[in-house]
Image (tube, rainbow, N blue to C red; front, side, top):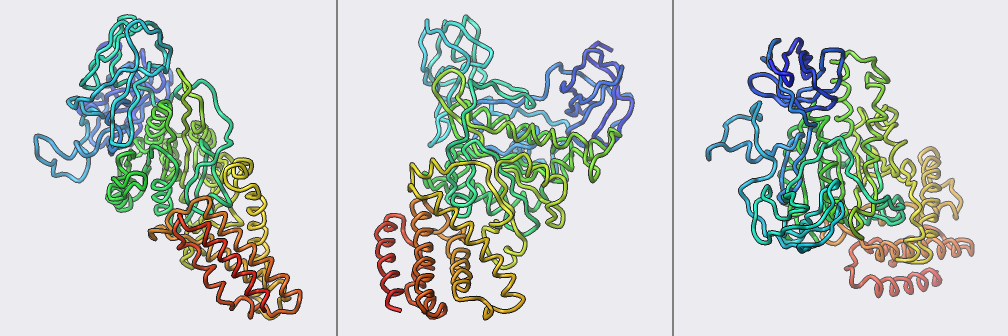
Length: 582
């Protein structure tokens, strides 16, 4: 038995203990048993190495051979990632279903299957951006490849390489063929990177620009910064999946990385069916041309579920380094935390709150901290990774550990409310339980309207007042409200139903521009101010709210984008005239 191999002495689910791996290091990749199951060293205990196996270990016996590869768990990075569907350790799922032109005929992935993540036979047209004699630094642009119709793949100098270009090979090549030589060292289009290691950057940028999503409740009330972090907790049926699809379609991101981590098989099947059918509003083509899906269902090996988060984040950082804005949708971090809990239990570690490992907060922090807007290595490129982590709290209980830790770590908290979902109010983001820590008022004031932040604060205050009045109305009826309070109650309902509600399936209303959001909010505030003055002069609130103009206020969401400014001016004039007439 060589120094790079050992044997198993214990098997407990996905956790295997091996001895004889004298040169093993933490997070080294190993192959276990005759089937060469993929595993990773997660603890060194004297002569024993504790391994978490990313595949089903049933049938594995003590004494099985364990081979140490000497490298950590890595992902393949290069042209061909976009449009792919991978499992948690970057095995491409569509090719796994076919062998020798025939389907496997099995509902699960065969154990021990070794298949490259990126196709080796496909040829890409490499257009060099350097010439012989150029001196290049880490991250410098070497050339481009048209990966899809809408996105060019930028081939960069590896982070730990610098020198003089000694040879350039333009034209078609496979991803493992050299296209540039630096100090006579060949540089192919594909490279590998450890999933648990952050990719280097030149420097971080301040989170002072919003990621525009086209969703009114998000962009207006609780915006997320470009390169920011968001957690979106919600119980079953609150619309997390539809919200994530809306973000994928309409958010101002160049690349979407969707991580289906431990979700039920039927839900993930729906995602895998629906995402390829979604059209990209930028081009009219399929959204999959700029999307990467990582699918890891709840019945797949639990250890691979834990790795899927790191796999997705490493791919996102790779496209960030090319100067793109990447949106990572992790659904859900609750299932990831459950995977950590199960592996921790197998390791017989001291449990923390609700059985989760004591290091759960630090693992969540490592995940969220890999987000950010950055200045990339090797040029003036700027890129970002924005993270949206969905949380599935049992029974919609936001006091459970994963939700609480995520709320402390993320910059934005979009709380999905079960009661709103039952009332068919979507997006079901509750305005009093949600918050944002990003100060983006200066950007909105400069690029949309100077009084944007003032309008936003007014909307939040009115919604809070309306929430308090609702409690009174439910107990004693609307008749006990004073006329001015009655106006607050009615305008608050208008703000909820005509502004915050938004249909993800309506052609016009699915995405709302910032200019349209501002005009809608301004008109509703004008309605509030004019009716308040009228009530103070003796007008009846119910008579005011029955005016024909308010029916047109409710239809503002259907305004075509090119007609927003003209219709807003017209509606403003009518609103003032009809209220003053009363």
